[in-house]
Image 1 (cartoon, rainbow, N blue to C red):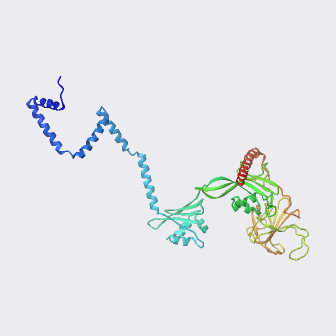
Image 2: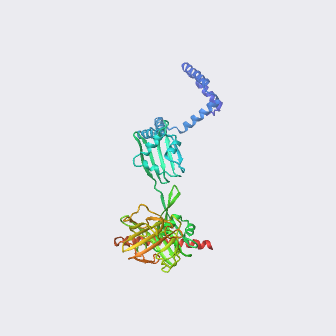
Image 3: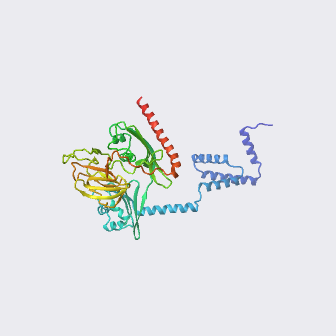
Length: 475
């Protein structure tokens, strides 16, 4: 067998062409001419190289069955351009409609209320007429609330392209606002209240100088300090009994909105150590939804009477049957306790009762007498002014404001003269034993004891953790 070179192979193909019949030769010649024509029309070599490269890639992955290839290509095209469903179309149309409505209402603007502002001046700043002020203020139920605007609050509003007030938001605080919206026949309003996130916190302190300073060092607000004193106010006289070395710890709530602290909530549990005596209070809500504070054994922290009818004052004159009167310089018994306090300090009813007398008496000046159950009468004298809503026979609740500290009558300075009478006999209000309020009812006792045990354990655990932390930091 003869081995052919590449050139020989070419010759062999050429010889093959020579052996074709004439009509075949003519056919091949025609085809060659056509091919040459097409080649003349092709792109430049650079473009041709790219096209060839693409064709090779396609050929490499081309399946054996052309029909299957067509089906796969059709399927991939459908996936690449998904058909919009009816639900998607409707949702898109609704979103576009809402966006158009929002745009038609106008953009939001804001005004901060300043001292001396009123609705007329504020609406004038918004570019709105007195007629609009009238229409908004007549909004059913909520229109009158706009008369309570205060400095620091905010009015947010929207005016459309026609100059119509479409929406007005009265921001009372960070949690509460009122939204007024324009309707065909006027404005409608709705109260909006946001719910804050409630977190549980723990605090403790030892008193060196004052309760307020100790509370401040523990990170407590003034409001929280007042509530702490109110819880233990039936057992501890915070004007007289507090000593250096007293201490307290408590579990309480903090309110947050978007991770910003808004303020404090309720005290959940607390222990106060006063002159070696320890008092613990637990906040408990019973099955009926009533809430109060109790000791761990179920006794009410509340007594029938407050020990002190004014907050955080000093005793300027004690109960003394042999006292020398400061005005007349004669020996006259002092049958009450005087609490020095700034003029205008609120005076609280020591217990539930009924007004027996309210008005002026020579030595007492402006004075209120309250009749309580079990023949107890309390007296509040030298007031600068009285609660005008109270009349003889009016019923009052413990802690209700009945007047304000002053120095009317025979007084040398602003103070409250407070008396506690039992069956007509004067008793020392500082030392008299006060009757307890009702304890936990038997029907609630098991539920309360389980709750109290868990709460006290949490209070003690936090106290131990804080103690260990302080010891470690002091090392």
